[in-house]
Length: 440
Image 1 (cartoon, rainbow, N blue to C red):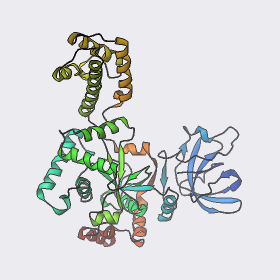
Image 2: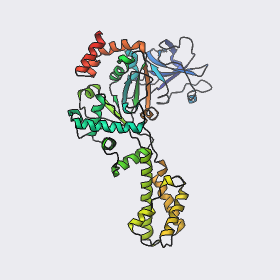
Image 3: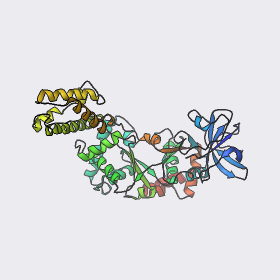
Image 4: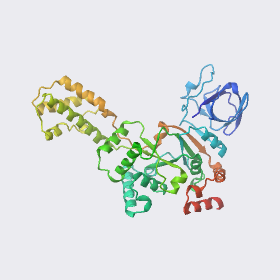
């Protein structure tokens, strides 16, 4: 997200919102519309980020939009001879905070973002990215509360919450302020700035906008969209019904390093439509679910091996009921972990020898079992606690700060651009909010 760089001599003028004139020969400036530039101090390990506001034949004018930060971790930007090095895209994403003095600064930064960037505004820069249902208390207890709220909404039979599409119901709940496991984003950077600035209870706090270059935003009715819908239905209504489809979903995300899914949804109400909403959900896996999935996969592997041994006449024929008893190796109750393939082999072999008349090729059994365990990646199936903020580690992102004393001017600028509470919330509540903001 920052593709230009410059070595220069920092001095007292390199303060937030100050301007600096830099000779172009000192810089490697990206030949794109990206106006962000990383400034590296020749004499120290400090860096800061500038916004290119003017380019002349031999000179560029830069506005400082970040506080100075140590370059520890960015040593690959520096060469002993001060050779200028182009910063690779995303080298600094998620690492720094950019500050905006006015809406013009903000738009210049946003216009430097990738086309697929989505935005989220929060009125307090200290808040992490966490869904409302998980912001307080124990996660397991909150999941139970979440389930009960969803059941209640269905029972009350309110039009906006009776769709057969569980995603639409959850999105409507989110936009009417009911705690859910969703996080809402917008494709419109000005809408995000609105949410970072318009909040009377946080008007003394710095606001923030998270700009994320989402690797993939899944379309309505895509396979991932249907996965999300099935997962929401499972979490809300069928917690104890682990179907094969849900097992496959949980295993996929238990193994995957990225558990966050971005998806579009039908604009089922005017608020989502005007806010140009996109949503994200974190596919979490509880410890009990992870244990169940590991044991079930292990049992399937052992069952298939037994069938093969019977087919090859290495063991006598066994009734299905007895097979089910043989393959129940409860990982938690055993002294070894799932990664210890040797102990799994020895336990399984001992059970076979004890319960079957056999002429087992032990080395062949060992090799087959090890290969199947490696293929199944059972050791990678782990519980994943809900952590939506992991987005910032897994996706390219930049954090923009709106200082509290700049909020009121930002609100006026947004209003002049047609972004205000009356538009963002196109109902009576939104109109009342707008009147208070404008006149009270």
